[in-house]
Image (tube, rainbow, N blue to C red; front, side, top):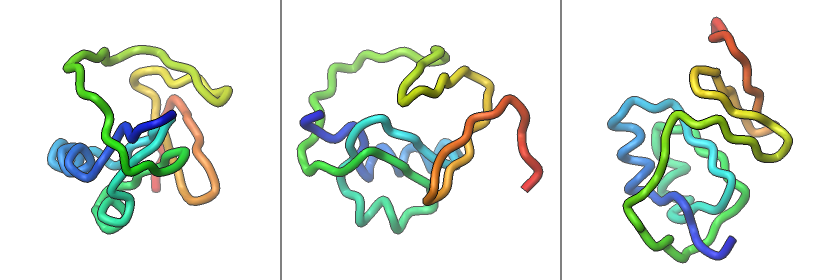
Length: 92
């Protein structure tokens, strides 16, 4: 990991799309700005360097990292102490 995968502009886009949060298995930049935004962001760390945009990507994929499988349609809940992934929406 040598560059940030998320910055304040993409976090602002996520807010406009009514996302509740973003989990990044990588680094972010603009962390002070992002911490003041109305979205939860969890990442492995920070780095001031931008990523190189290639304009490619996939969505609705099953991915696995840190021993957790993330499947489209499941719910992710996170706080300062950790992350859980479950099939049903919780009543909070």
